[in-house]
Length: 579
Image (cartoon, rainbow, N blue to C red; front, side, top):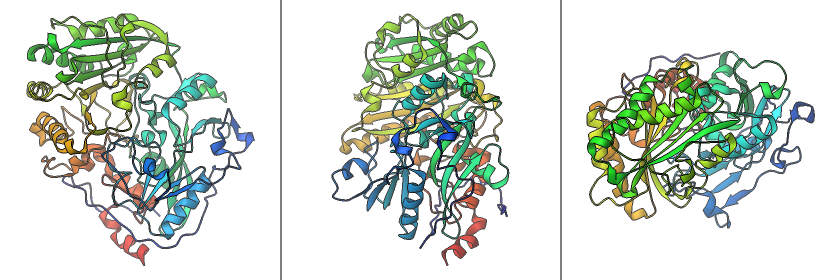
């Protein structure tokens, strides 16, 4: 029986947290579980990690030679000291690992790839890391009429397998080594999203290992076609963020409206070829007026072309606004060369960005944020799509350096930057004495088909924006944490000073992206808006996420600092569960 939430979302909520004391567990596998696939249901190559005789994963305790590599992720600011790390190889193994953690009343975190921008996985309170990175299979499941992807699969491997075997893809992210598990649950987007929507717009089903109110562990498969609580579980994984409801052991992808039995017809076709442009804009040619005009041009073009279904919706651009210490700004732009008016759209876009700016673009000869050195694309070139996908985010030491420390903040922009925002950004990007070249604000094209989906159709609520930003800086020395975090906060809070230091959903901005989590927005000293982090990330979808939490994690076993909270109305239920 579904239990309703007693009161609507309080826009002034800040993080309160929830805990539960659990003891003992029994396995209860739901009849709907599809974890034990048979050859009759599958086509394509399946790695041994998902085979029927796959052994359980390793338990890595303190003292093990592997421990140091497994207690942290891609950001060395965040380090855990768990009792052990449990590597998981199958759904059955996940059930066993979770049952053990429940019985031991351990505080757990969940990892699929290690790219989390906050301390959700790695922090001193964590006692067990449940690591799903060994689960890497990608295959077509005939029984589900959908493509199955396990959570540890890296996004580049997903692209390669889907494209080489079936010519299809998902509109996912850029960085090659991101684990699918967290990427999908937070929404997922990339260079194909303006043409085809978010990654979760193509999510058909999810397999989740959950902890029930009676402490039993069970595996549930929830689909887009379900109703009631199971439909809510599927929906919660379309942008509700990772680590909230259980262990995700499998995703299935099938695009809405897909027909027939052919695998090639179940997902969007990848472009055969794309037109690619990469230009560098030297800082020595810029002053404040030119800098502001460039960014205004970028925002203006995306404002005018944020609707779906236009020739411009096939174009996507990544504008790396690097600090002056780097020496240049960089912009990578891609469009499906088979799309209507592709070359003309690209040429008009580049002209619009440079309009009224007396600057001579240069080839990209030095890596710039996500953009590697790609001087050959100063003149737009047509290349195969998979080549272009490998080109970005695969060989840039700034983004892929596993030994660095970093800070990241995000915002969805509905409109171009204001004059005051541009003033703050220019001041910070030219700050005297600041010498770190690995500092940037990345502007990503958004809108298009993303905006064709209704706000409540998925948990990802941001369906009206024009472009998205990620402010980030990287450094190596722990002694410099305060300095770089101070720069990051001054820049971001200064740009959004008019709304209390954060991009409050409204006419101009549309909140933050949960896959770029920032715990500062849950702290009153950094978020002075009176609008809680729940609203910034999830807006009016948050109460339904709480309802899904109540149904599928009623004891609050899973959680982190920006985790979905149990509704206050369930306090009695949680107390009863602890007895």
